[in-house]
Length: 512
Image (cartoon, rainbow, N blue to C red; front, top):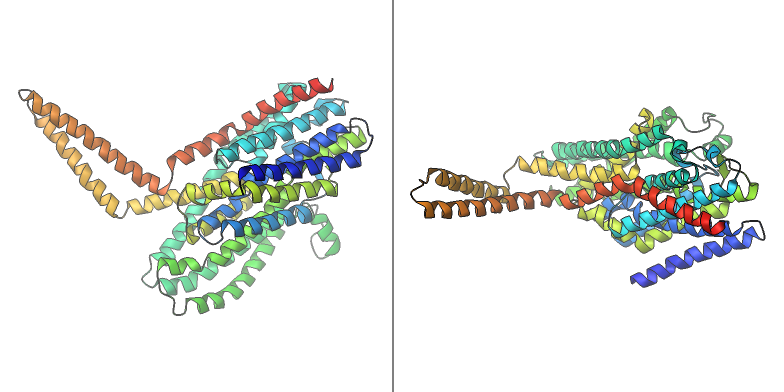
């Protein structure tokens, strides 16, 4: 499918959403702004699918556990299910408490202009980031959009700078936590399976434990993040559950431990049967992690759909609420049609434009196999659980990409401790460089021509050694890609804020 057709299909979805919004708003005052916000919301949802969802399925694709087509199908289904089943029926109108609703005074239309501007600005930034093959945080994009429009509406004083400080902190905390945890799990796999004399016997013992830990982590993660919006409904149906507003960490952990124990009992005999007669090659061991990776991709997609759909539908729901109630509220109900826009839009964006970022996360940062991808998926779930308990601000995008970085840098560090063919070549060429340097130093000033020749030879040899070192590093982690992604992370909030402020002034000017 060429890009023109993809764009036309995406535009068709957005127009269909706008037409539906127009049909339900009727002759209401300022009803055109709901149509505009619906158009922007559909565009935002598709960009979330194109950019953010790649983090959930990219490692599985890069490892070969899923094809791109299979990943799109799995993620589309579970993203939509997460949004529609567990996306919740109420959303905060100001994402992350960045600005106070009081900043808009008694004029709900200024609030409508701001939310519309935030949606479009965030969507435009995500679109650009996807085109540049940079996975960025959709939460940070919408936060930047809301902040920029809020500043344009009421000045810098209305922004909660403490909250913004926490978001900035997440730029550092998220990737480091994700990278460290992914590296730890990959090291466990290598040390407890790959470095053992009998790999098959080691895998027979260790793999069921690892899969059980993954199951426990994902059930805990899903309870905390995937079911928090519908926990009240669940407690009404299941009276034995704690009657709290949202799941506590202790109940989520309990669910996780029970799920992990059940998983261990199910997986252990199956692994034992599968390894019987299996050779102890790395490829054979890798196959044991294929099904857990598919499971992880599905669970991450469900939790993402439940938790991050608000980035697309939150401002749209806020606009709908402001236009129907003619006031600015801190909480707004989410009509079913708005939730459908979010869930379906994410799936459409993923199917049409997601493969670009899936390839980036899965194969263009570092080379992945099933074991490495398993470690990344584990880190994605466990880091969110730990951060939630500690109250640390984190970004799921930064965690996942940071985990990819961590796996790549661990590979680089471990392999640097062994002598590969390329490293042996580096050692030989480095010795030649040192020998030439010694000859240059030993050359007397009387033989000027010879000294110049030796200096040129040393300079050329030094360049050759640098090229080999660069090639060795790039073989593990593509430095250029890392720099590009980190730069995109840093400018996401200010870029979205600047664009949002401009759009706010344009909308307000046109409405005047």
